[in-house]
Each structure stands twice: as C-alpha cells, then as structure tokens.
Image 1 (spheres, rainbow, N blue to C red):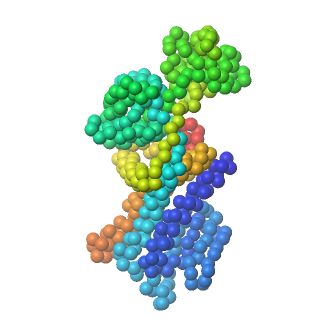
Image 2: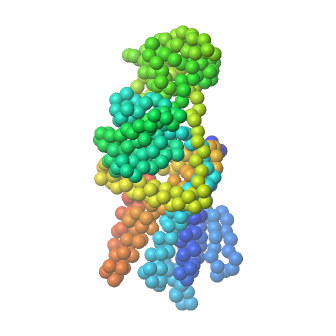
Image 3: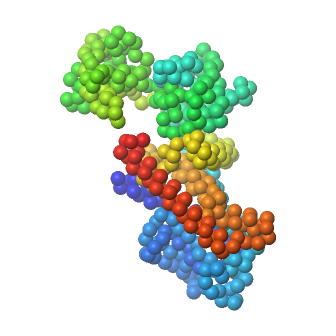
Length: 456
C-alpha cells in the first residue's frame, strides 16, 4: 500500500512538473512575465521566490494538477511597465506556442522515458503460446501450444520481427483497431518447422480494445509447462497428494498441453454448482501416479468455477529486450507516436459508441498500476510513466474548453476570423467544458471502483 501511494505521488509530481514547466519555459522565452509556478492546487504549503519580481515557485496541498500564472489584463490590473510582458498582449503564434508547450513536453518526456526503458532493457515473456481457447480465432488459425511467433505482417510482404510476447500483443491490438487480419510466422519452441498462419481478426466483430481482448482472440498467458507449484496447506491440491514439481500428463484420460490448459480444466470442473472429481495422471521423478483431485467451488461474478489453491505452471521463458542508443531513441519516438494514435482512435470510438466507456481509467487504476510497475523494477516503472505521459499529452490536446486543446481551438478561430472568441461565448464554452470533464471524471472513477470490486 505504501509503495502504491508513493509511486502514485511520484508519478503525479513528475508529470505535473514536466507539463507546467513546458508552459513556463516557453512563456519566459516569449517574454511573458510568470507570476507563479504551482504544483498542486489549494493552500500553499511551500514557496520560494528569489526576488520580489521573479517567479514564485510553490507546492500546494492538493497534488492533482498544477498551473502557471502569467500576468494577463483579463485576470486583473497590470502595471504599465509590465504591459508588454502580459500574455494577452502577445502575438497569436506566441500564445499558441505557450499553450501547446505543456502537452508537447509530456510527449517529449514519453519519448525519453521509452528510450530509457529500451536502453536499460527489460525482461519480457518470449512469444511462446499456450494452447488457444477452443473455437477461438487463434485455434481456427492453427496455432498450437508451444508455438513460437517470430514475426507479423499485414500484407504478407513487409514483416515485423517480434522480440517478445509484448510485441505480439501490440501488433494484435493494432490490427484489431484497424479491422485487418494479421499474418504470423510461427515455428516450434526451438525455431524449427517454420510456417505461416493468419489470424482472422475481423471475425471478432469488434474493434473494442480492452483488458479482455487477448482472451477474445484466444491467446492467454505465455506458454508454461503443466508442472505443479506450491500448494496451500489443507487445499484441495494438498489433500489430493499433489506436490511441487509434479508434471501433469493426463486429466480424465485427456492429454494436458500446458499450464493454461490445466487451469481451464480445473475452472471447468464444476457442474450445477458442485465440484466434480478429476482423475489426474502425473509424473513424479520419473514415476507415473494416479490421483483424484476434487476442486473447491468459488464464484467469479455469476459463474461457479473450480480452484485447487495451488500454483499451476512454471515461470514463462523470458527474453531480455534491449536497444542501442540510436535504436532506443527511434523506438521511443515510434512507440510514443503509436500510443498517441491509439489513444485518439479509442477516444473517437468511445465518442461514436464503437468502444465501451469501460476503457476509461481514473486515479485509482493509475495508482494501482504505478505501485505494481514500481515493484517490478525501474524499467517497468519508466514504461508505465511514459504511457501515462502520452495519455496526459494527448488528452490535453483535445479540443475541449478548460484543456490546452480548447484554447488552441480559440486561437484557430481567431486566426481564421481575425477576431478573438467573445467573452460571452468563452463563458458558455467554459461551462460546457467543465460539465464534460466532470462527466468523464465521474465515468473514470466509476470504472475504477467497478474494477476494484470485480464488476468489470
């Protein structure tokens, strides 16, 4: 819990400071006088100012944002000697540059964070597949347990080499969003017997990208052998006599392809609300044994499933993904661009009803992911921080009043008409913007709570 809170606060601090520093730095470069640079809102808890005429830097009590306050005749009287340095007196290109600098700073930060993530390197699961779900797109394509996906292509001519399971999931996500099939080059786990298969992703009938997308495609966890891990004392696994290291060969006379297939068998061993006994054949140190395993029944939403309260499977095979200096920077630019486009696509589809509003996440989800990534290591946390920085940069560029993108739309109107938006319309648009943002925040917070309660 403490790690989660600290990671969340560090995440907020970094993203807010970078965003506001973008505004501040460009404002100063354009000759605008900045009165205050604040991290947070509300009561000031710390302040520093070198001279009475310099910018005041403050930390405020509510750390959910920040602001840069510049002198502006629309917000109060300005001394005659400061009029040339007032924001509202600046040319249209300068005002637009100052407003755009915050989101651009977040996107540049994402590029550097992704690049650093690539330079440091991260251990990711190898693109070895577990048995695909029965009847799924992956199974109909001919994918099997233990297949190693080496490359993907949209048109069969330009192929993208995959470094890890993360790369595969990203390529599938992109293809689903575009409504296109995806071709795969596949071999066995040792790189032999190469073949090509095609995932008929349009067959899914959806372009909705959510946490359950890979399950819809038929791909689950990376390949893991059906070997038992530690069982809890008194658990169904312990009562059946299962031990750590036992390799499961057959369940009810049917071969077990891998750990994921075994987990599905256990989950499905419930009929009419009652757990059914399962006949397992295992290999223990070279000797075959027959055991009867009876799972316990738990409820997952409205569905009753089986559990044996033991770790099933081994850690997946990992690969170290690392890039050189220039390659890492180029990959950072590419990933930031791809994620920006993905964010805009998802927002557009939510707007027209083609994607669920369940995809919106709020501060509780961000805090949870911040804590998880921080516990996994520096490179994972940097990747998470880059992802949130992209989201913040793109969202702030949306043409909504109250956001930087809304102000840029005002300036576009001014550039096209030769006159600024009237005060009456500014007030109306601001009220509408506040209403829209409150609605989005409410939906995001509802989704956060629903996820924590297991309702999504």
